[in-house]
Length: 302
Image (cartoon, rainbow, N blue to C red; front, side):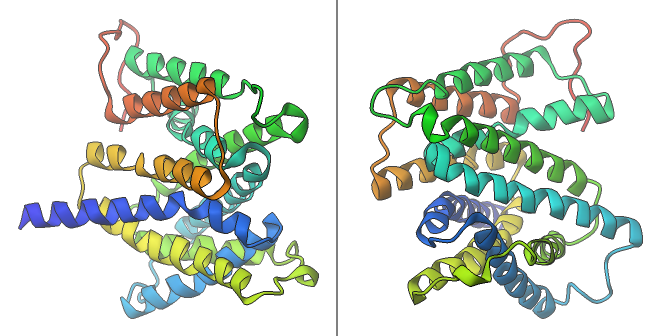
């Protein structure tokens, strides 16, 4: 029975991460500005998540206190702004590069843990962070035949880093919401995003073709509603190391989609940089040991 649960959890996690990897394609193909894309993702996502939570009886009794609702709202603001920055970065730095840089999230989590909770990372974790930083420097090197700095490449990198930081902020806040169904938290985030971006959405330039509306609907229903349902189901079944490993399905699919759909061919240096970022992220997530722990450096508290 346990093995069957583990297998279903793996399949759900892979499916959720594979869906995440295709988000960039649907964002670009929708033909909409970033405010409209995120607004409709939140709107369609909120409708689908509300239907799921209603059918599952997750809304009664109301699970939030005043404090937890405020925390959920804070996490929602961070998530929504994270989407805005990440989707904006696609147009400047490409889906591949933006996704790779976005995977620096674990390092921001460590940084926030140090600042907010006094946690101290191990020497091994610091080494993997340094490795990823080298990879980030390699990714920023623009060579012949690739994107140029004049095209806003640097802006895209900064946007992806900002998105990673905001995701880490949201993760820290959500950790304080123990006992609340994660699907309901996602619903609150989506509803907040809809309200936040309503004044910023440009209704004068809505899609003229049904296919573009389809892309927006998929971003909301599939990439938000269904993806979150799959993801949270997997998180309940899998051990943390397995989750960390399977999470790399996301950047792998994103890079593949960028290549197949747009012919994005990265330089050898950029490929190497992406590899170092992902290696550093894996080392931190999986707590690999390099024998670099030293006195004064203790594992981060969980």
